[in-house]
Image (cartoon, rainbow, N blue to C red; front, side):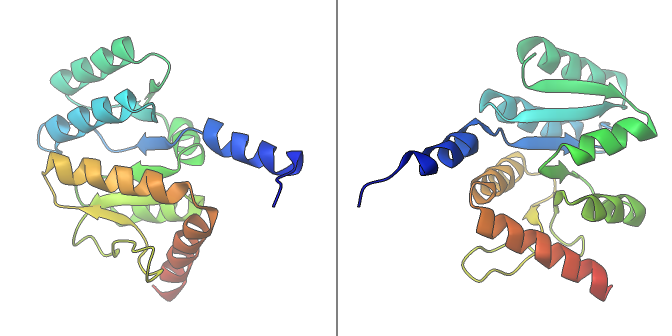
Length: 178
């Protein structure tokens, strides 16, 4: 079968779309700053866009400034204001929580259509594309490589519109049944 030019733009669009990661929670030592900042560097190295609220302790802010300097095209920090929270979530494919999120914040992310990436045991199940079950991407709390693996799984599933629509529907169903 010969492919026509009609199919080419959608392929190009998929390739050009960068995976977008948002972080809303303060980045502090108690809140897993070391794991999160190292994961952010890895994600930026892979070309993923990472946006964070500029909120956290001094060492975490220095790590964020370092990311902004090394990865100016894909890393951004926004002042910690309500409007910027909305901006980050609305432009993110996923929102990362390194610790258990507050119920209101998780509800906001779910209502906005972003998919949570959060520690196991936070009330959402890990997405499995084969069974089409799960409503988030989960990782072992405090484990850098588990977080990186969850983000890569999320980015891979984002490439397939069916999987992504399925996880968003699972999230909507989860919210409805709460």
